[in-house]
Each structure stands twice: as C-alpha cells, then as structure tokens.
Image 1: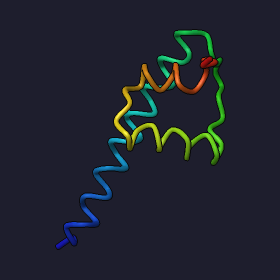
Image 2: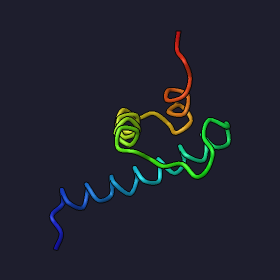
Image 3: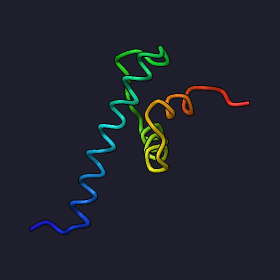
Image 4: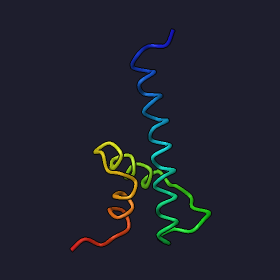
Length: 69
C-alpha cells in the first residue's frame, strides 16, 4: 500500500505535467514559442511556481512572456 503523502505527490506531479502541457499549447498558439521547445530546469522551476500559486496556463503564458510595466 502506498503512503498517502507519496500518492498525493504523484497526483500533484501528474497535474503539473498536464498543466505544463496546456501552458505549452497556449504558448505555441500565441506564437511565443515554436516546436520543438526544450524545457530546461530553470524554466520548469518557474512554471512550477506559477502552478503552485494557482495561475491558469493562460495567465502563466502572459506572466512568462509578456513585459510588465
């Protein structure tokens, strides 16, 4: 039997992967990135932070690529 915290962590990882996939689709659709796109560690950490604070993939695209004044 799996430990509940391990199960929760695995579910969070699945959710994060799905969220990043949606972020990628939105970023491609907005022409911010073009396939193939290689996700490096700093970018993955930044996206995980956006995910953890509850940004939608669409909001994360804007936060990641747009200049704020």
